[in-house]
Image (cartoon, rainbow, N blue to C red; front, side, top):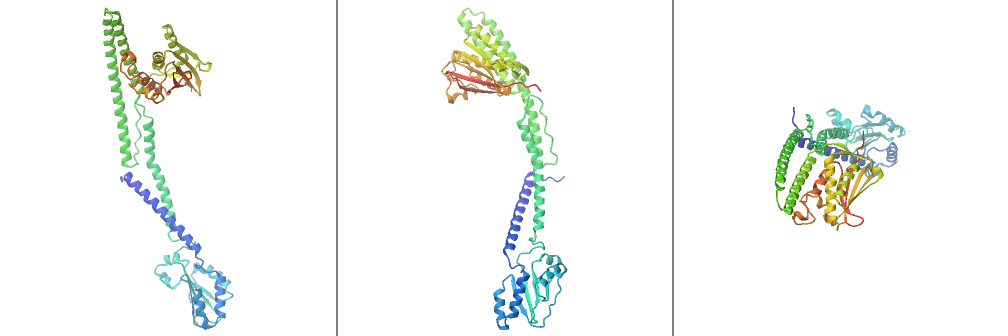
Length: 449
C-alpha cells in the first residue's frame, strides 16, 4: 500500500486550495474584463450605422472615418469594388450570422474566423474556443467589401466564460474532495484528543481503534497512546500495591509503638507520644485516601449526606467542641454517590481546622442548583485573599512554622480537595459573613436513572 505521509497530504491539500483560489481569481478577472470590453462583439445596429456612414462618405474621407472607429479590438478596413463576400460562416455561427443579416438592411454578410485563426484546420478544437474572435465581411451597396475584425486578447468559450473555467470547476470539485479527505484524516486525531480527556486509569483503559487508512504518523501516534495507557495503568496498579503494603506495615508498627508508649511513666510525655502516633496514623490515612482518589479507587455507594454530617457533629459536641449544624429541609434527604469514609474525612478535616484555628465550626447544608452545598464557618481571623487558593495545595500552611504544636503538616485541605474533586464536586474558600473563614463544598446529588 502506498504510504503517503501526513505532511505530504497536508501539502497536497494546501496546493489544491492555492490552485482553486488562483483559478477563481483569474475567472473573475476574465469576466470583469469581458463585461467592460464593449468592442468585443459589436451590435448589428452599430455595424449597420458604420456601413451606412461609409456608403455616404466620399472615397477621400473614408480613411479618416476608418481610423476614427478602429481600435486594437475593432479593426476596420475596406476592400475594392468587385471583391466577393467569400468565406463560409461556420455552422456553429449560422444563428449569429442570421441575427446580424436581419439588422443590416439586406446587405450580404458572412462571419468567418479572423486571419490570425486560419490555423483552425490544424487545431480545430482550439479555434472553436476562440468564439469571440470573429471577422465580419459586409458587402456595401457601392460594391466594396467592409472587413471588420472584432476580437479580444482573452480567449473565451462560446458561453462567454474564460478558457480554463472548466479546469477551475474541476479544481473546485477536487478541493471539496480534498476537504473531505482532510476531515477523514483528522478524525482519528479528534478521537485521540477525546480519549486523552477521558483517560480513566482506575480500570483497564479501552484501546483506541487503529486507523488503518490514515497516514503512518497518525497510526504511530495512536499505537503510542495505547502503549502509554497500558504502561500508566500498570504503573498505577504497582503504586497502589506499594502504597497499600507500606500503609499496612506502618500501621502495624505504629500500633506496636503505641502499645509500648502506654508503659511510659510520665503522663504528659505519654499523652504527647500517643498524640504524635495518632497524627502519624491520620497522616498516613489521608495520604492513602488521596492516592486512592487519584487512582479512581474510591468505592461508590449512596450516602445521605445530612445523616453523615449529623453523626460527625454529634461526636464532636459530645467531646465539648463548639460545633453546630443546620440542615435546610430540601437538603435533608438528598443522596450523594461516593465513598462514605472519604466523605467523612472531607468534613472531619474541615471541621477540625475550623475548631483548631477558628475556635468554632458552624455547619450548614442546603440544596443549590441540583447539588448539595455544605458551608463550614469559623470565628477565626480569616485567611487573606491571596492565600485562599494556595492553602489547598499540599504542605502549605498559613502558619509558616513547621511546629506540629501549631498545626498539622499542611496536607489536610489538599487531601480534602482531591477527595471532593474525585466525587465530581468543588471546594471554595471565602470570607464568612460574620468574620472568619467559610469553606464551601459542593457535591452533585445522585439522580437515579
